[in-house]
Image (cartoon, rainbow, N blue to C red):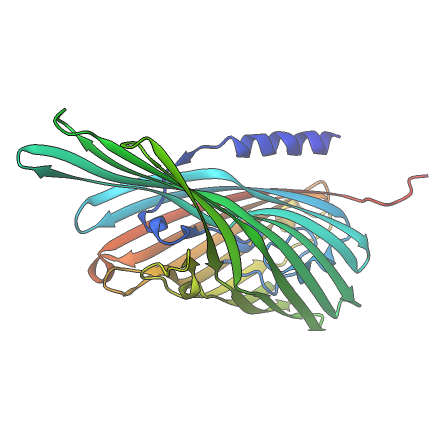
Length: 399
């Protein structure tokens, strides 16, 4: 009961964190790709496809869940600070801080079980505005967008002697994207206007994963998720005519696939490498292709130091230390159709609690996106991810 109460308080704290704007790049398509792996993986540059760990729940590869021998729940907090600069408007700062989903796993047998999870997929959060004039009358045009897509996941996994493991995740994708167009005049001669667009998107998809362990120190992993057609309903409200119109449409959400490999080096730790491809160029919204979309090839490399599982050892020896690096292009091109490249370095800690039945994970990522000379914009980003994981033995007789 103490664990459950603590976890509930932690969830409430994270859920009530507020949103304070985001990147102007999130105005493209369905918004910014916001499907982060768990905090442990973020401390290792995002490496997660071939990562198996009995103390953290994988968001990336459902086949890796076979290592869990107790029921476990994890909740995540995410904070991002964006330092933006361009050649026209100078510089700006924005911050995002929010609850970043949860995962829950129940191993029914030694090699079989299921898991649930809620994961953000995309995030749109931006404001654009500029002033202009008609004769001597000035006005301000502005566009504001917010919202995003989420995925509720239900996963099954099974393993054969911990040599090969298969996983299947069913995904219900849902979310809302809102856009407001305004024209505000500083003179009563003209009427200010505001048009409001609200789009609800929903549908189903799946993800499959596989883990192979030909050697105790070697792990291979792969994941695949196909393109999927989602339904949407758009409501448009015009303030000038005081009217609302509704339209039905569709979204073709991109597919992805990835491979990974990890090695365990005795007394040193874990080293892993990932490659993940996402076909953002295939995105269609109401059968229209958004301009300047770009396929994403993501490369990640991560390291985790060896740690002791003996609760009698010194605490600093039980802590897991992580480092990582990630490189990828952004999912959209600049107006000159140049890629916007981004790179990340990361550091993380795994802090065991009560003999690893609970664990706190911390990850700090520093990244750079874009180039003033090549793209006309530049972003420095600082991400902080925090997760709490609590595990208990279920389905055991206590008498």
